[in-house]
Image (cartoon, rainbow over all chains, first blue to last red; front, side, top):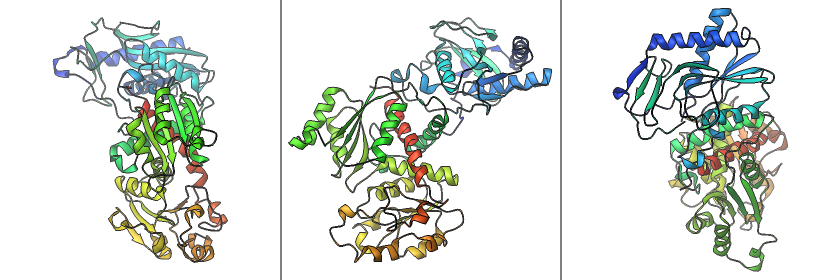
Length: 197
Length: 305
């Protein structure tokens, strides 16, 4: 698989109903950018690390907004968690995604992990392990576009774009212009193959 | 991916590229302060070496340990093999102990293939007789891609003892799959029978090939397999098929020189060539760890059923 290819949206998107349109998604990102600036005192010594694939695009968008709002653009990067997942032996093989850390590393920085959907929390658990193997951040925070509930580990997000109550059988599709034809969040019926991630 | 890695010829283009891309990501981990990953925790990898090896065995061991697998090293010295235990009985012992992967080197061509029928774990061929050495070919392809940025259309000359070389066979098969143009160059006595059916060009004249290649891969003259008087003298071989500085000067400016090691300095490769900036010999060893990590991850990382 070529580097950085997004995992395709699974399931039948046509049967899904929209819960955030493009404008609302943009506003949610703007709000999170403001909140990060507030909590990190202007974004100094802050690093945004996206979890591939859609988290990477979200991290870049957040950094762009922060730079528009306050003129400081925090370094961004991507952090692949595949090798730290706890479900590798339960599922088919996963291709590795790109890990690309800022040149100054994460030591002593406030690292904001960015992902599209927060579900079981296991991806973030793996991300914490992956992150701590690369250095020692001063603090780690979590920003997600959608929190859909159903946590299996004690993890919560510091910044949430939208809380969407879901049933376990439903699927959340995040569409981003970088990978898809438009921006938006859709809630669809279970695709059958998409387990908590 | 297949369940085993027995031959470079079994790899499809997609499989081979997946291994190379995975190795690319894993290679970055070697630059980190903490090089260990929890990925293969609880898996057991047995290194089963019936033939001597430094590089391959060490790099498989390092690769497995970086992925947190348990590694058991087995060499024939000091084992029941010296009491006459057969390959099959050794295999059944390993099977009973629950090896998830067996990395095997054997002097008999086809031994890994036989093992695959007896052991339920994944078999990785780490060199079998004069047959194949697929992970070496993968790390060579990975090295070429890192140095030259591509594999498609690369002109690669493999020079030396093609007859006995498992590295040559695996490289020819893999590089052809990946779209490179391969030629093999050797004295007629060191060309295998049927080389005409290999997916590569055949030449007996090194000087004619050198100006037209992006990669020249020198093979070791295997003294332990030279009982048949394949060439009159080492000096004559070196004159006609050795890579020395004047010959290296006829290569295109960007061309690289590779050698799978161990080298006979002054025989197939001059010391000044081996130590030149064009030489990738030390890089090949470093890349070997990343490539073997990729192979172990791709064979063991997924669903075990």
